[in-house]
Figure (cartoon, rainbow, N blue to C red):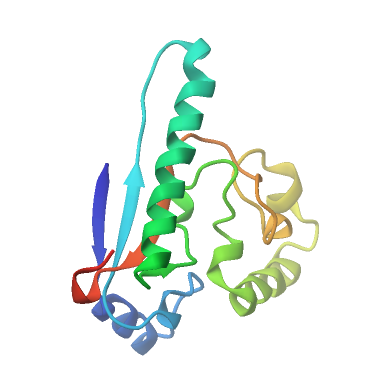
Length: 145
């Protein structure tokens, strides 16, 4: 388990430099990224590890929603295969990514010919990537999160 602080200064500085597409600027205050990683060697345990991971994430999500600290954002590099990190960047940012892709990747090489990972075309739908990491994002203002 890992907790990574994401202080507001990151988004403030990012906005001063032109911003970024992750959409973190829509969240006021300081935030924290939770990451849970599991490693095992026996493929027969895949289902059990997946079930445990989903259970842990569900409990953290429920708690952060109850205390008003939940943020609908996922870090792409840590996302589990049934999450939607690109979609979590916000509709405007996904549209921006889509327009950049259409302008600079007319043949959709990076959307269709590159295997694995999350694609812009899959934003808004869960289950577009691969991996067993997962993450949740929340606020750590006022001791919550």
